[in-house]
Length: 325
Image 1 (tube, one colour):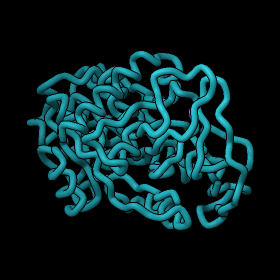
Image 2 (tube, one colour):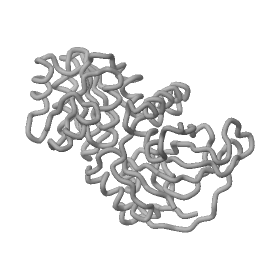
Image 3 (tube, helix red, strand yellow):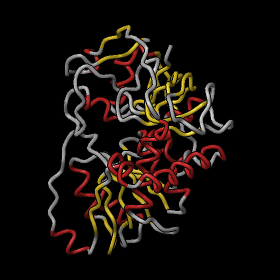
């Protein structure tokens, strides 16, 4: 098989392609031939040893995929060779053969293409967990999404709208806001032109927003928190800006609001049944066209550095995929 490997920590350009022996599926495992591997922002961090998950060198980036089953290990039931599946593996997917637990896979509905199915686990899985289990977002509430045109931001726009919230997309250009509006946002706010706090207050008639979805971090986090409604919920999803903010905790007292951490990987381990229910809902929404599972670009495996740099430079709108030979 061919694999993109991180053999030393560094920027995307340090990744190399290597020929490796095909893995064999063990007890309870499935051998998958991925056709598409979806990349996420954390892949740019994990290869530089800046992420909370720190795999031993060498390893492949890529945490989610879609492909077909080419082998079954002992004890696997309910899956068959040739079946299309999508899955999540935290890291290690950017290669042409994967051996992984059957429990980490989900059958792909016929209505979904490999492109659509490959990127549903991490961004959409994280977001439905954030908005349902953590924020308990209700129909009619207001949701502000920071970085609304990126992969995880777009997922928040689409899922927020599917849950019946009034979605305010927040991004750094009118072009990005227009993109978010086409995918379900009800209105937009350009935070390079307008003050984020005042803009959100204005758009909610002075009440403030019920929920802020923040995958950006940096200076925008405090501004978003200052725009919260009474008993609002602030979701800490990630730090794409590269800066972890230091929040004045007196703001939570004054607003009676909650700051909620979103750690999807740990949620999957601790609450597998809730995770399965979430993903069944996501796949159903995607098959019905309620969410778009929008793919920005599909690049060949040998262009993995280019693909990761699109994420690193925050140029992606929706998912960035690798085509696996």
